[in-house]
Picture 1: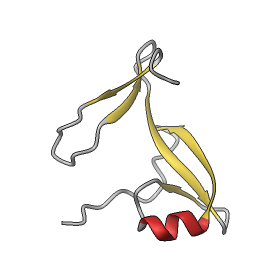
Picture 2: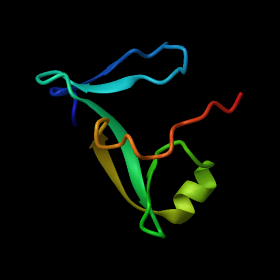
Picture 3: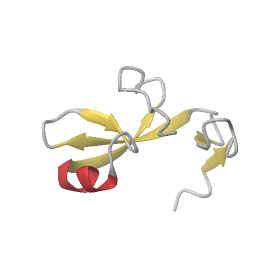
Picture 4: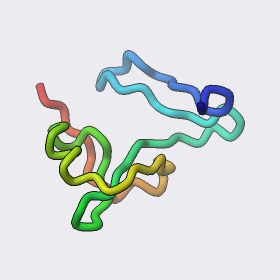
Length: 76
């Protein structure tokens, strides 16, 4: 759906996560979701079962807007 305007870059970086980048503007986006308490979180911050139980809606947020969200931590 977004293939013509968004591209995944950097897959294979140290954290193993690719970056979703707008090909036209170079803006970077991250997938976020609103939980049942109304807090915005980064997708991947909680176990999948908890995510499914608490997710109200999903949003692609510019990285610059998501700076105050909790950072992803490695599970290693």
